[in-house]
Image (cartoon, helix red, strand yellow):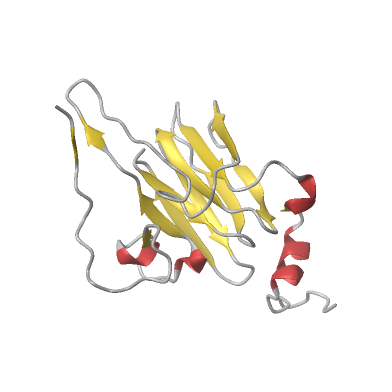
Amino acid sequence: MPVEEPLPEDDGERRQHPWGRRASDRGWPPGGAALGCRIIELPRINDPRGNLTFIEGQDHVPFDIHRVFYLYDVPGGQWRGGHAHRELEQVVIAASGSFDMIVDDGTERERFSLNRSYYGLYVPPMIWTELDNFSSGSVSLVLASRKYDEADYYRDYDEFRRASGAPAAPGEPVS
């Protein structure tokens, strides 16, 4: 009979958000506040016939899942993303292979290497994201808190920085 592998023991510290551990708890990335992003360890059922991971909204991710999409067949050297969301929350999972995800709040940037199908990266609203360094055959699975709405996107980085309240960069006009 399959047995669910227990999750690591909690260190007793109360967390503001019960879903997952902050990235800095596990050294993803080393030393940083992770800009509100955190690695979520998803349930795993180990079985010699093949492992199984399942995800339920509000139980394993901090939102109801309204949309699921995935990226695949990304050519070598290409990148994806390059936008932020006003309200949408998401969890990004390397369902197969590996890739890096860069998160940016307009002031700080951090890089996460995703390479396990039982870890997801939680990304709150108002975080600029970019994905790169895709391995051959990788699949990026994204769980989203809202249906697609173009009005929710920031696709211009300078506009995003102004909206996020980030200080003006040297030489950048102040609005």
